[in-house]
Length: 226
Image (cartoon, rainbow, N blue to C red; front, side, top):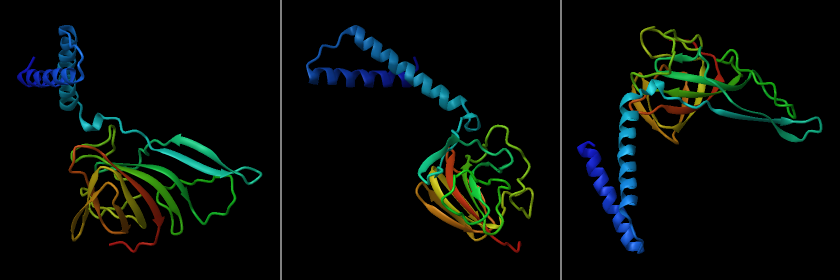
C-alpha cells in the first residue's frame, strides 16, 4: 500500500468510526477491514484509469436523435429514435462531426418526418443541417482520425487548422469548454454559451482534459471566399 493510499485509508477509517459512534452502531474489526480494503482498491483503480487511458481511446457516446412526423390521419408520432455515429469524412484538426438531420428547402407539413437530407454535409443556400461537433483536447483526437481535411471546409493553408465554410453556424456548447480562434483573437465558450458563426475563418481548440460537445445548426449561405 502506498503512502497516499495509507493516508486515505486512515482518513476513511476515522470518518466511518465517527459516523458509527454518532449513530450508536457497533463497528466490528471485520467491517472496518472490508472498508479499508475497498478504499485501497478504489484509489488504485482511479490512479490506473487516469494515468494509462488516453483521451483518444475514451469512448464518446453517439448522440441520440428523435424525429417526429405524422401518420395518415395527421396525428403526431415518433418516426425515428436512434443513435447517430460520427461521419468519418468530417474529422480534422482534433474535432469530429456527426450529421444528424437536414433539409434542402422549406418544409411542408404535415408530413411523415422521413425526408431528412444529410448529404452533402454542407447545404446550399436555403438548406439546413443539424450536427453535433466533438472537440477533443489539444494533441488528442478520435481513434482512426484522418489527416485529410473534409471537403465541407475550405483552408487557405492546408497545414493550419484555420478554415471557413459557406454557412452561418448556430452553435451551443452542450458540454465542456472550447476556445474559438479568430483573426482578431480568441474567445472561450463554456457550457450553455451560444455562438453565431457568420462564415468567418476560425479554428477550434480544447485546452481542457475532456472532450467538448457542441450542437450546431448549419444554415447554407453564399460566401465570396478570402
